[in-house]
Image (tube, rainbow, N blue to C red; front, top):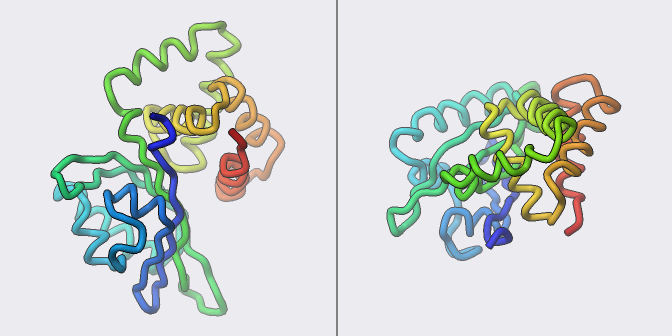
Amino acid sequence: MANSRPTGRFSYDTRSCKWEWDDEVFRIHGLEPGSVTPDTELVLASKHPDDRERVARLIDEVSRTGAAFSISYRILLGDASERRVVLVGEGQFGAEEQPTRIEGFYIDLTPDFAEESEEYAKQAVAASAQSRAVIEQAKGALMLSYGLDPDQAFAMLRWWSRNRNVKVRDLAERIVVLATEGEATDEGLRRSIDSALHDLTE
């Protein structure tokens, strides 16, 4: 079911190296909420071996620079199955020059990378040229804001469409309005889209 694919919030204290996950992040990792205390070792151990090094490099870089980021990778569950997620976030600064926290969210896009995604994409854009145009514009805004490739951008658009029961075109139109009327910077646009997506009601 669509609602079984959650989005979850996380934060990471760069000074104490402590992680905080909401209940959905635990579930994305195949864990019961609160069943373990997340730490960097667990975070990295849950990654597919081929993705682990680049995730470790990203954590180190963002801990130093605070730069906004997005990364797609695979999570290994206890039963050896995989989930494909996109991790998006940025550093939060206090009085120090370096970030004191990293905050962001996980999106489980596993079902959206399946073969049927291509057929869904065809159906979603088949209605009219206008529909195709607005969806492509929304994909472009997501690519710019989150650093995604076209497939990841559509998967993200589709995920929110399914989980908030909003048609892909209607959701795309909202994103395009934010892109044309919102803040001019990539970071400002990302924050506006992030807020709008999380405020969607089913």
